[in-house]
Length: 329
Image (cartoon, rainbow, N blue to C red; front, side, top):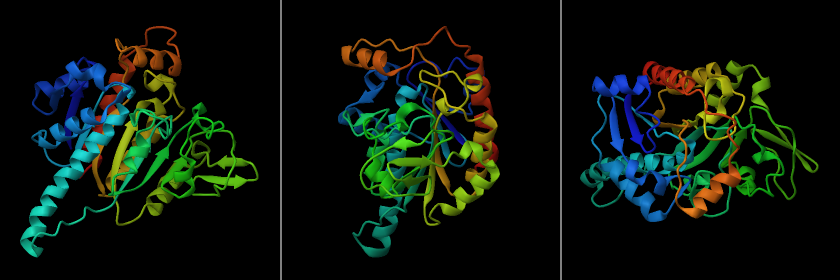
């Protein structure tokens, strides 16, 4: 595993697991603090394109194997698009050189990708802005290599009357988004959606497959068997999927135990198909000067009752780093 930090909000570099690896030359830090607010919650197309190009030009972090990138707050989850895009750009550059040597000027298409997405929210809202931490999944589906997005773990209210909340049920109906809530009541829906891997349509209701109530090892085995064999896997994790005692984030927390997430990483990474991963969901107080972002954060996020105990994030991040290091080839 190669470890990279995008330092956008200062939440990572104060944690011992990252400090120790940076001091030992075992991780790469990319200083983006001057653009932290500009990229937080949402970003414009130019900003996203610039970040994607900058990441693609970075030298690889120390070590060998796939790059795992930590980005701080879940307010930056849309930056997964830049990370995945940069990895695909690098692949296309290698493919292009090989293809030119073999077949002239034809450009080889990159192999298909499935995103495996652990989150308390589906991040599938269709409202603008396009590059938003709550809508980025839809932009991922626009990438020609991306076959589908498999989201595991939501418990949040996003799935209550999802059409009223702007959820992309068209992609769900087409099988390009597959949702496995950890726990959620049936959702009232309308229109032709049908049933799928993680849901069943009964009349006016969508019944979700609540994987938190299943034997977890059995679910993971079935998940791996269901993923297209030709697809590579990109893993993206928002720690708000975890129980509050195991993570402190800027958002409402889910119900997945850390042990379940670690077991999933072991299974997925052990398949030999994971070519990159990113992790967000650390706590960083937002100091937003842009009025629309300040209003959006005030309206959309739960109110923190007190300053959170951030030691739990350090412990969880240490466990995630170890899991990736052990499981990735």
